[in-house]
Image 1 (cartoon, rainbow, N blue to C red):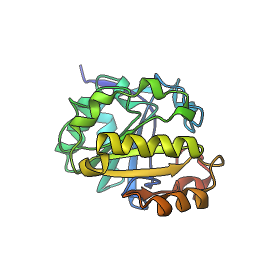
Image 2 (image 1 turned 90 degrees about the vertical axis):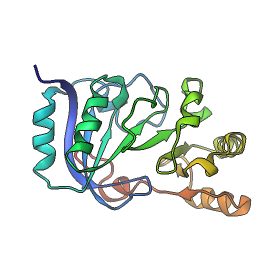
Image 3 (image 1 turned 90 degrees about the horizontal axis):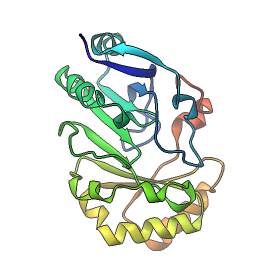
Image 4 (image 1 turned 45 degrees about the vertical axis):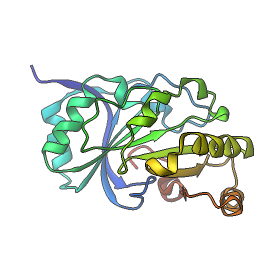
Length: 214
C-alpha cells in the first residue's frame, strides 16, 4: 500500500519568507501541529485535510513543473511519512525546503533538504518546547528563524544567537509578527546592534493577506 499523508493543501505561490523569498514555489501543507503559538497564521491546518498517497502528492506537485518545493504545516514532522515525502521530492529533482517549528527532531531529515527551523520566543507561548538538540545538527544550507512580537523577544533572540553561535552555523532570519511588532522598529534594533541576520517581512501577507492557497 502506498504511503499516505494527511494534506491540508497543495498550492503554487511565491515563497513568502526564508532566503528564497519571492521565488515561485509549490507548497505542500501537512495537517496537524503539536504547538499553539500565539501568532499562528495557519490554525486552519491544525485539523481536517485529506489522506493523500505519496504518488498523488508527487503528481500534483509535478503539474506545476516547479524548481522549488516547500513542505510546511502545521508541523510537517508530526507525520512520520513526512521524511519519506521529503526524500521522494528530492529524488524527483526538486530543490526542497522544510519549514518546521523546532520542537521535533530534525536529525532524520534528508540531508539534501534545506531545513528552516523556528526557534520559539517567549511571546509565542511555546518557548519551552524548543528542541535545543537540533541546533548542533544544522548545516550551512539550513536556516534559523525567529518570529518576534516585542523588544523582549528581540533581546531574547539576540542572547540565544550569541549563546549558540547561530550565525556561524547557518543563516539567521528575524521576522516581526505581522500586526504586532513594527517592522521599522525591528530594523532599527538590528542596525543598532549590528546583528549578522537577515530581516524578512512575510511577502504572502503583504500580497494576499495570508489567504489559504497563497
